[in-house]
Length: 118
Image (cartoon, rainbow, N blue to C red; front, side, top):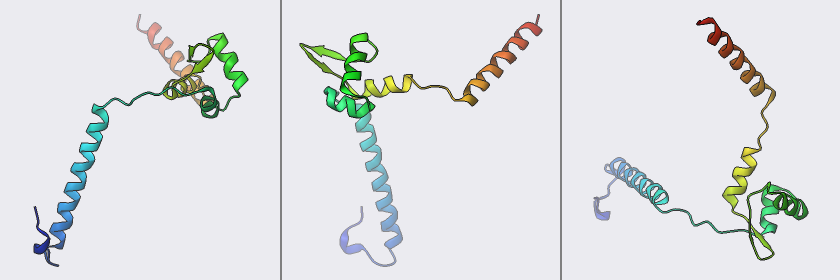
């Protein structure tokens, strides 16, 4: 480690390299700490859920009643977890025209290869 009184203009590149190394080590420690400690999941209410998924409260109540949205009920109150709502949104992704065409081509090629081997 360098001491403050040792820093000169000639040693500046070495000092900068040392600082970069230290910053990278700190980044690694922070990232490993994030992975080591699980994130605490806190339930959110219907108002936050409504803002998160851009649906009205009545729509969310209807989805919950039909079992279409991940939720938890305590008494008369509904609770949600943000990560579950985001996963729910992602699972509802519609495929683009290009993705559908690509899937069709793969199925056609799979069928051709499958039957031509016999």
